[in-house]
Image 1 (cartoon, rainbow, N blue to C red):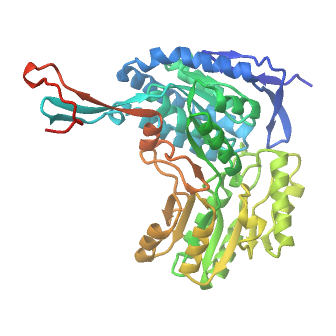
Image 2: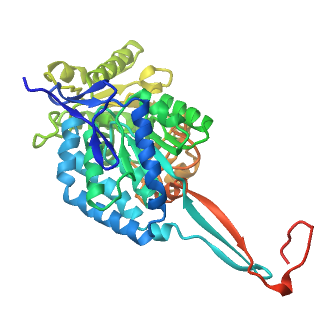
Image 3: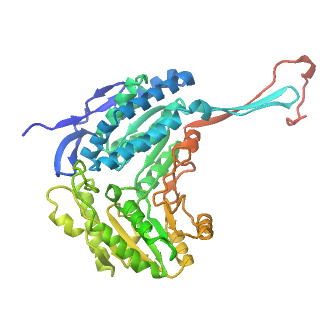
Length: 499
């Protein structure tokens, strides 16, 4: 049996083997076989990467906007030219289908394109003659060394959400990707280098909690962006803010899709299937609960069941495959445990994905499941399952459905399906969720808006990417200036006033 390769860090423009002696397996989820080891950083290796980023900062922040933009444009072209290679790595280590992986790359490209307009995004304001002979203006400046801690489910797109704006604004960026699918981060680092990015501006350190804790406490890191589960997001936010850092920590979700009686059932069923089972349900914007109002419950359940029976589950690289495996055997077992608990707590499996899991071979496969009779208080409703599981909750009215959504501790995404414009407008106003879709099941904002939820789905004040991303990665400075004029100079011990 051939020796497995080891995936290394990227520090100061080159690969560096981990010296910690600790490793973690990288699987092929479709076969169940281990395909590599990834070296896990210790604190000294994190410190080395931070120092590289710190050393590169002064030169990078003084680099003209036109040069930064030129590098980002070249990087955008390289990502576009290599999108299939990036997608193949996503399929290999995450298990995504080819179409899903290419979609991830495309959404990442949107954020690079937004960052290419940094010269416009960083424009400040200027007020001439705010007082006699006094001008006031605002500028935005980079923070310094910033870090991104990203999840396994979008190992290409989520880093691009973060580092594109961070680098464009003049910061240096240290990425700690998921150790489950780490290879894409190294390919992105190589493409950035080929685009002309100076060494040290973008570094990659692989690791586990040891590396994360050091990033959160390191005195030279000014800001941390994080995407992951809610318990870890809360912990990251608390630790990093206690250490004086700016933080945006995006947590988990339990996204509801409210279906009113006047909705187009076929359209709603297509949307529910697409949003629940795409990427094997491993999306923080996946629809995990259909809230069916009144008599719409039975027809939409039947429409969803009919569509589930036609979904082809298999290896992501196989032609025609619509849903691939989940990320690991532990994650598969957790999903199966949720399904068992749902039955024990009184729900009914209208479609039982455990049957596919038992017959799918060595890969980490779970079939699509549909839980009827899901209710608040059941573990399958209260917790984020993060797998190919869709629940049906029956309510009698719009108001009952809205109250259920608003009482959920998560507030990431939601959707309403209806033909009634008045009901849709009322819903967008009343629902307590950060991202809302009207007949759109996965309302991920385009790159020139910003991504983020409410309540326990976000810790911090600013959402990710877009205009709020620019704001997060810069600090504002207001300058009040007056040039010497003997005619206006005098001693005045009073509080400054506009005259």
